[in-house]
Length: 512
Ligand SMILES: Cc1cc2nc3c(=O)[nH]c(=O)nc-3n(C[C@H](O)[C@H](O)[C@H](O)COP(=O)(O)OP(=O)(O)OC[C@H]3O[C@@H](n4cnc5c(N)ncnc54)[C@H](O)[C@@H]3O)c2cc1C
Image 1 (cartoon, rainbow, N blue to C red):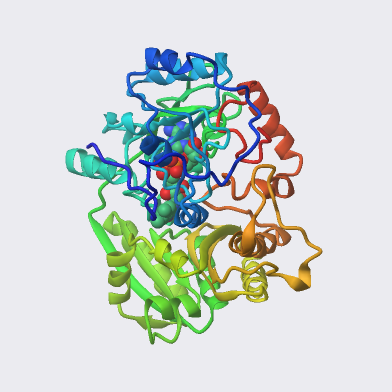
Image 2: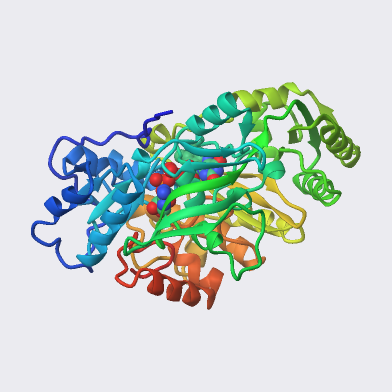
């Protein structure tokens, strides 16, 4: 099952002495105590201090990481990289770091796209990919326990070939990301409309707290009324509240039947309406993916419509029912060939060539937000108008890719040129900045303005700032506006669980 991490798009020379860090923050932790490295080696069998390992641990797939790499910079180097292979080692590393007040930043696939695993205050980076493999399968109840550092593709392959089961979580980054990373980021897979997001799949966790205490949340039962759900406290915690070492997920028999259809709508809004009606009639086809005109043309040149891809897999009776509901609710749309769905399946996990786009001087990224069905048309229109009003924007588009009975995710893509003052007409409005990241230079300024454009459209209409990529460093500055006093509650929890603030400092809107 062993799989290796795929490094972010642009290689960084890890052999020479240090790349100038992008984040040269004044350290709010004391200097690493004398002899710490040898004490760390005493509790963890694999500890690396070489430049190559430190560089690899310093960055993720955030497009700004690629931009800095092109300039020979790593965001911020950890002092040491620990690679535990057991629960006992994770616990001992956390306990040591906590006692000696050394920052501890978890990373695994490093496929995050928000800078969440960048070790802003240096210290120890904890590489979880040594903790891999399926631990237990309950074939009767259809649940599976898997160690957190297991890469997604290896996990699904093992589950399918040995047990004829699937968890149905298919992020585009399935080969780049780990199960623990899915949980830590509250991720979504491409089949989420049938199987749910990761928070719908997870039933229990094993977590190491900042002081090394091992916590088990949830259990071998489907639901419980024993106070708030501690499992959900750690889902989306991005390494700031504990280290997830093991995960139990719901699984399903590999479905015996599948279907594929495509429809064409005259406009994006009527396509959204059809998606809403499908979900509200109780049909949940695994893939219900609606592209706006610009994205439809990009993916299916000459199609001349807003394309809705529908793909499902299930028991044949369920499949038939869902197919009928979809056909009913799309009766006003044109029927397109199922080859469009086949094309999507062939290309769905292709990794965009971000490095070449960035090297060509472009600033590109995607922004996934979510809102209620009532709010989605306004979020779509306002976000695109705001993106297009920026000085430097070259392209802006969106699709709907994760739908629920009450709303959906809108996934925007933007491309532009670096511009020092991208929003001259709106210069009074400050860019959303976090204590840890303030944009510098034309590329970062355009990037920030584009992210703000979409995010503020979502917030104005009661939406959320992220549907599945998470917060990390990139969105830390939006957390107060989004959560209000909820951020104080989160900060209290952080203070109680991690009083020395060692776990992934500077992320998720936490000051430290
Ligand atoms: C090309 C591409 C496509 C993508 N497509 C999708 C998609 O379809 N859906 C989606 O949801 N995401 C997607 N992503 C984003 C990314 O793959 C996910 O966020 C993924 O869940 C991150 O997992 P990871 O193992 O790489 O975590 P990392 O990037 O290593 O870490 C991310 C965060 O999780 C924390 N973390 C990781 N492991 C643990 C652990 N064991 N315990 C505690 N904290 C931990 C880290 O501290 C960090 O804060 C995509 C990324 C890329 C590059």
